[in-house]
Image (cartoon, rainbow, N blue to C red; front, top):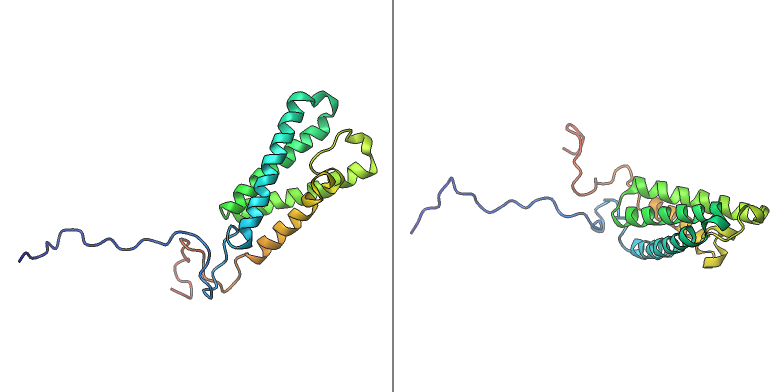
Amino acid sequence: MTTPDPAAPGPAAPGPAAPGPAAPGTGAPESTASGPGRVLVAVYGVFALAATARAGYQLVAKFDEAPLAYLLSALAALVYVVATLALARDRRTAAWAAVGVELVGVLAVGTLSLLDPGDLPDATVWSGFGEGYGYVPLVLPFLGVAWLWRTRPRAGRAPAVGRSRPAGSPDQ
């Protein structure tokens, strides 16, 4: 019978768990990409693709006809891409920024397109508050804000997996 070598490495200690949805009842913040957040990420992804395709075509084929409208379409596409990636990767600061810009953008462009249609001679994703897309662009940022608020880290909750507490904190 052999005696184990004390210098040999033993079984590896388990590392930190991979980030993901919080275990029920742990008090840890829920990931923005879990539960209903998956549907939200999917809808944002569809809008990212649609707005990017629309803006790409408008910028390449028709830019001289309505440059402001087409640049706003490109801005909407960029916002949807950032929101999709930020929500999917649980990057809350970027998600808040993207959803905030989206909310301001759809309200501003929607209002401008109704008050002075001559400023935007061709439609954007956000024209008429997203009427060309079934008003989903108007509703989507409100859903994004609600989801980010619902899944926010709160005082007294355990930190997200992989984040350490400062030395001397009460729970150490």
